[in-house]
Amino acid sequence: MGKVISVANQKGGVGKTTTAVNLSASLAKKNKKVLLIDTDPQGNATSGVGVDKSVQFSVYDVLVDGVDIENTIQKTEISGLEVCPSNINLAGAEVQLVSVNEREYRLKEKINAIKDNYDYVIIDCPPSLGIVTLNAFTASDSVLIPIQCEYYALEGLGQLINTINLVKKRMNKTLSIEGALLTMYDARTNLSNQVVREVKNYFDEKVYKTVIPRNVKLSEAPSYGMPICMYDTRSKGSKCYEKFTKEFIKINESKSRHSRD
Image (cartoon, rainbow, N blue to C red; front, side, top):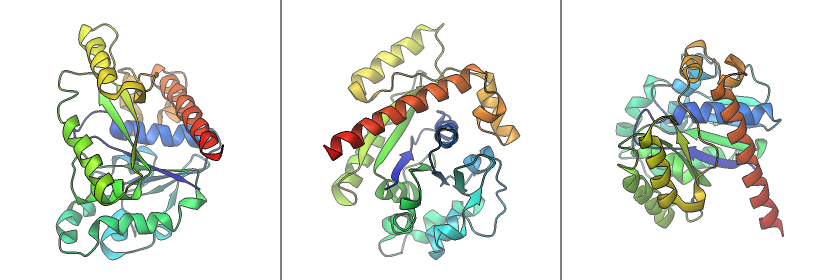
């Protein structure tokens, strides 16, 4: 059965889409079947895997009109990686869903119908905690939180954790924190090292050992519509996401072994 993971942080510019795209691509490279669902109106995850945003059906149609996810799915150049695209239409969804019954469950119902076709369903969330993000959390098994190694890194995290706990209490009792991934790390600064310590205090053993550095190639890759593993395999960014993916798989395989025992 496919595991559904939201990649979320309501603070923008923390490496959220970079993580969703590169984790999805690296998992597919390791022969996992992956569906990347883009729920950000900017559609950066969609274009980041080389898919055109002007499609007939997008995640907007799934949320607002109840279109089945199968009708939105686009293949990518990476074997095993498919995407449910997003575009600017989604910007209106928050308002359109306000008066809809069971509005927080619309994505869950659609994902449940297809998740067994995949090993992982990765949802790239918008940088906000509105109805679209609530839909993602309600549909997910867990939330992966990218945190940039910068001064305001922990600001707003309390609000994110409160939202996760609220969803857990009212809409999705099994929701958990998948892990916290430190991004944009600069080994030369005391600040980066200080943030690493603070995040480890906050999340304890949920912090991944792999840390993603600041890397020019990681910033360039999306403008070519490629994940880093296609754009520049030898770059530091590519090697770090490769390492992170191995760590991610190892943790998940160990969890599934324990649940079977």
